[in-house]
Image (cartoon, rainbow, N blue to C red; front, side, top):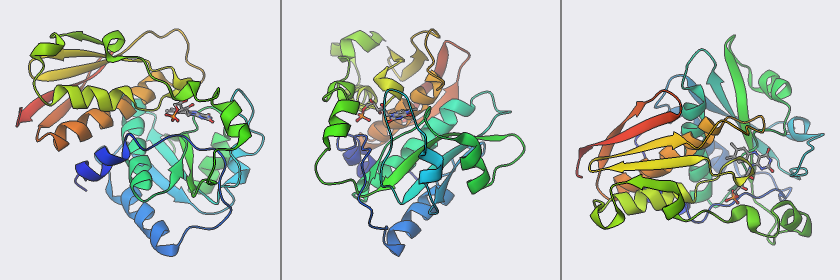
Length: 266
Ligand SMILES: Cc1cc2nc3c(=O)[nH]c(=O)nc-3n(C[C@H](O)[C@H](O)[C@H](O)COP(=O)(O)O)c2cc1C
């Protein structure tokens, strides 16, 4: 499946994590559309997404931690990776965010959940191979219309949605000299979601590329920062494509994550 870049680019600024859901089931055509994107967006064979429509509460139940519980969701998507792959985290972040942006484009709410779910229950529900693990999940559905008081508390009254300015995140070529596609690509990456909003990605701009790296390995919170970086990678590529630029990702050794090099249009 090709990246529907305009559709996903438009979804990026609209997406925010929602944790309280309307109990109405999704329509069959919405479930079909989600299943299609899970099945067909497979740029990396080592990472996949699976829609689950039975009892997602079992997977979230008992969730504890700074966030509290995900409530009321009737469906869930599991993000699964082959742990033998050295870049499994970035790949799962990348494909997972694709499904999340498609859900947003369909008007559905989501919330990446990396730490506070039951991976073994999720694995038994979706069925995983010997080397596969469920690295994260998201509820998917209609969020209750107004953000609940509980959600407001969980998001630190909006604090967890704020982002660092680009000046704190970017080095390399100075902004006035950036090619036209670089600003929207970095802006899209800057507003990407990350576990506990830690924004661990750093970006190095060269004339025809952006290199993503991770800030440090200090605080992992049970969720790899490289998974967050995979999410930002997808945002970079979606915005670049929307600016008419095609590129290719090359995965790097830590603390590097991956380099997006222009192949055409830049
Ligand atoms: C990899 C990952 C793991 C996350 N894990 C959780 C989680 O376990 N529970 C939760 O409620 N939110 C979780 N979040 C949501 C983040 O807290 C949220 O994306 C961040 O605060 C930014 O807010 P926004 O998504 O509304 O922009 C996770 C996000 C990411 C990207």
